Image 1 (tube, rainbow, N blue to C red):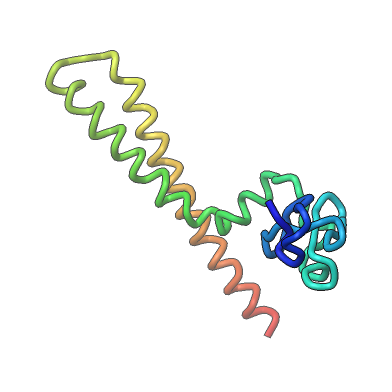
Image 2: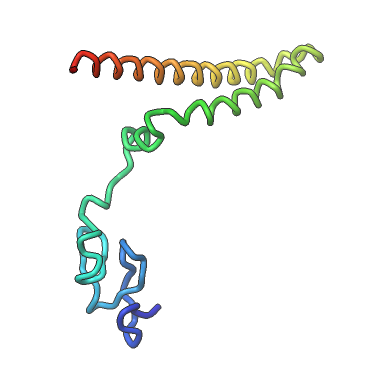
Length: 130
């Protein structure tokens, strides 16, 4: 790989901002990242290198608003696969799948209730502030 700015030089790394190859003359080390000297240095900060946490993942999932869209179809799929054999064939071994399906749907109901009450709490707190 060659340097984007100096094609005659070999690249020593890739800029964390623009993702171009950069040579030793162009590279600036910022934390554990590389950036183009005087071009992308401001865009790449030390804070950019982070270890994902549960809180960060939860924030990325937008406070759980996507959980019903993930767990709902999975729960329905599990139930649609396991309930007919349990009823028609009297198959008791699929009971565990029925339990999992109900648990997934319970997560959906609890997540939707949590969203509803959070929204109400925010509305009530904004009324008290005014």
